[in-house]
Image (tube, rainbow, N blue to C red; front, side, top):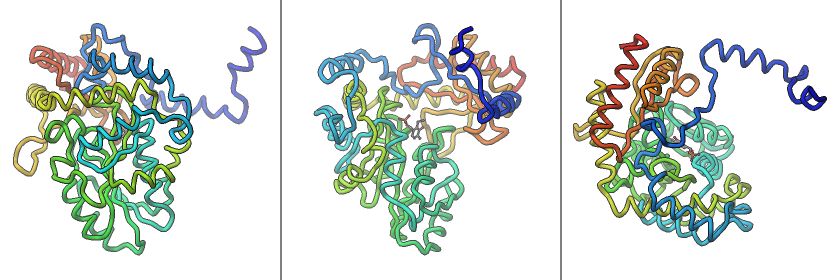
Length: 396
Ligand code: PMP
């Protein structure tokens, strides 16, 4: 062993606590290792967010290659310095037009889009009303903003109204996901919008899991609620899920785009989205536009697997089941959830396993994501495998 090995392999007194922390996490069954994919061969993928199969679509791959050939492997600098290509601006125009908003600004991830948008919109002396189901990127944006944050129960728009009515702050922002990422439930965006408007607040909705999944042609929950381009509405979304690429987007009035360029720190100080991802996202969006039934095929597959697994989907205002691409099969404790996920994988089906802190204690689960590009036989095989895996670990 060289001196360097010794130095690299050890902790000193200041970091020795990490060993105890890791041990405690492992004892609780909560240690995580990034799951390594098998390159797409063999396993049926019900774990990724590639809901429409775009990440391997030949046209999307070709567009990514072309963009890299034209602009390079990286965007080489922050957007304001040298990291904006014509393709970034085209993507912004195309997604704004598709979703019915005056303007869009592309960030290098959805996480950074959310943090950047929230911190640019509210600060010390302002109020945020958020809910218990929001994604970590929204939570971090709220924390970093230094605004006062009131958290209400998911879906409780009356509590949102009450918090807004009782505030002393002049400026307020309501923050929610449209589709909650862990279990796929939908937020009452229309009611939240009305509550915000009635009390002079803006509403920010994260459509990461709505784009390509809900609404006419995949335009999302916001479009479904008739809110595309509505005043005082800010929508964030991502290219990393149904579009199979990467990148975040903030949509709203043109003046918002200008303000974010000037003020959003995660835009200003971050290297621009890489050109390959920009090209891929544009191609995926074009494919979605050209085939507006894609989200309907996804919905059919969701209804089929939910039925086979005996999962109850919430009913929407019109009495039909509310679908998203995300389904949860609650197991309870982390260890059997992990064992069930491993048993699925051993049978050729790749599913996610969510444990605390991603979900509340006692609700560790298999997280399944459905896809538009599976046929009925694949969907049925997946359901059979999940049921067999649950039986094997003794939870059904
Ligand atoms: N919002 C939601 C609801 C998400 O599920 C995710 C991804 N997990 C993000 C934002 C972050 O997006 P990205 O992965 O592009 O950073």
